[in-house]
Image (cartoon, rainbow, N blue to C red; front, side, top):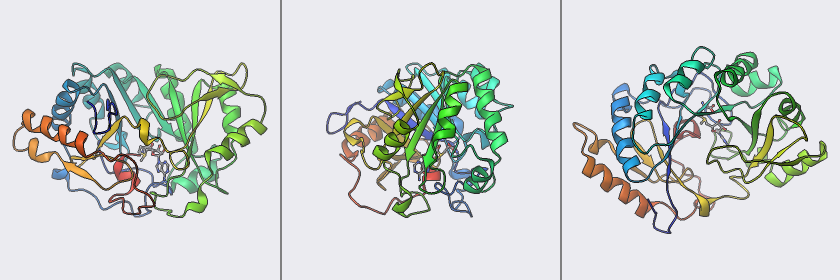
Length: 321
Ligand code: SAM
C-alpha cells in the first residue's frame, strides 16, 4: 500500500489489550487508563480477519503490543492464527517480559519470530520505581527465556529519562555477555510524565556511548525498527542503538499503521486521527468495507507529526508504543 505521499506502508502494530501488569511512569498513569469494556475489545477472530485483508493489500510485518500483550489470555492462540495468514512474513511482539518465562517456548513454537522487551533499568530499585509494580529479576528472567527459546533478535527497549535511568554503562556491559540488541529510546512527552525536561536527545546519548569506550559498527538486526545504526563493543555478542522519535523524527520513512485494542486504526502515533474499523467487522466481517477503510487510511495518513500538538487522544500505553 502506498499512502498519499508515496510512503510504502507494510507494517501494522496491533495493540491486543489496554491492560498492563506494570505502570511504567513514562507510559501509563498510576491508576491505569480508563479501561475499555470487554465487548469493545476486538476478538482474536476479528483481529485475524482484519489482518487477512491487510496482508492481501501488502502488509507483511505485524507486531503485537499492548498494554501488555502477554496479559491477554490466549495470546499464544492468536500468534498461531496469525501465522496462517498468507502474505504475513514477520510476526513480532513488544512486551515488558515479566510474564514471558512460562510462555516463551510456546510463543516460539506457535510462530512468533522476534521479541522486543521493555527494560528501563538494570538497577533493581530504579526498575521497581520506574515500573511501579515491576521486579527486575522477573524482567531479566523474561529476557533469558526469550534467548533460550531461540528468538533472534531479542531487542531491549530502554526509554531514557534524564536524571532517572540515564546511565548507559550497565547496558553496554550487558551486551558484552548477552546477544541482545539494546535500543536507547528518546522519551516522548506523549507519556503521562508530560514534561520535556526528561528528554535526553539522541545526539547526547550517542556522545555518552562514545565516552564509554570504543565501539564499532554492527549489523542492523532483523526487523523494521527505526534505529538507523547499530554499534557494538568490539567482540561483544550484543549491540547498541539509539532511536530518536523526538529530535530526529522519521516521518518521511514512516511505514506503519497502528490498530488499537478497541478496533481503531491509528494513522500516526502523535496524532489523534483514527478510523473505526469495527463497523466493517461487526456483526459480520465485510472484506470490501475493510479494504475501503485501508484505502481511506492511506489517503488520510498525516504527512508528519503535528507540530507542538498536545492532543494525542490516548495514553501511550493504550496506543501500543
Ligand atoms: N507493555 C509492553 C512494553 O512494556 O513494552 C508493550 C506496550 S509499551 C506501550 C511499548 C513500548 O513503548 C515500550 O517498550 C517503550 O519502549 C515505549 N514507550 C512507552 N512510553 C514511551 C514514552 N513516553 N516515550 C518513548 N517510548 C515509550
